Image (cartoon, rainbow, N blue to C red; front, side, top):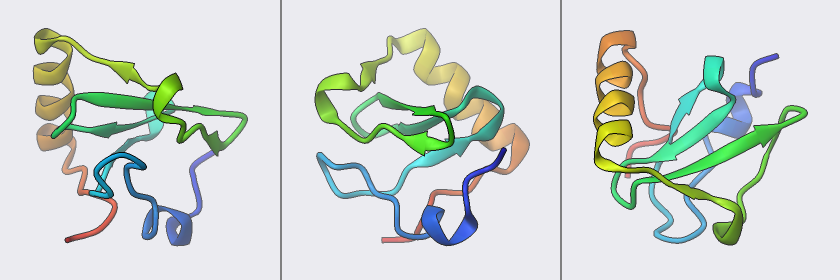
Length: 78
């Protein structure tokens, strides 16, 4: 199940307060500036910095390419 679009409009990284990319098929939100991925469990974003995954260069490239290819927009425009 997809996250509510109204929720996505206000979701921001808890660390830098910037926008995120929502990867519905992967149940995750991604901050490309900090290379930090937040999981979504049972349709609830887990927005805890300590539980976020830091991705390596290869995964960062994959996620940014996927966002470009699928036209995934940031959750909001700063």
